[in-house]
Image (cartoon, rainbow, N blue to C red; front, side):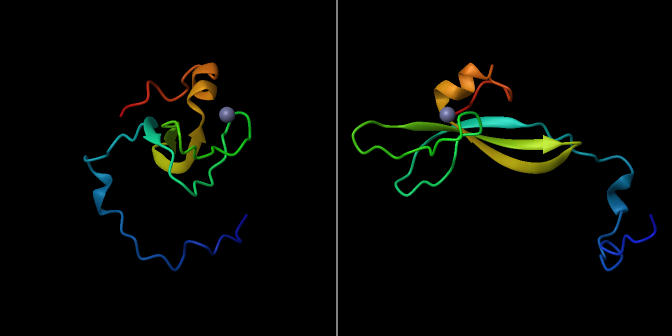
Length: 92
Ligand SMILES: [Zn+2]
């Protein structure tokens, strides 16, 4: 367990440890799908495709784990609803 050298070179200080801790919460936003979009839906694993004729939307979620940003997830709006809106109602 003494082989962790990955953080030893970091110079990030811990000066903010006192009081000002931001509480990051996972959140969802609704965005139109751009041409050339290459994100895959986290539920059905299908590419979220741009469609020229309809204004396709996607749900983009910034996911925080243990108060730290972890990842971005993309969803089809219908898949997100089907999953029970895991990160809350998407905002515009
Ligand atoms: Zn989907």
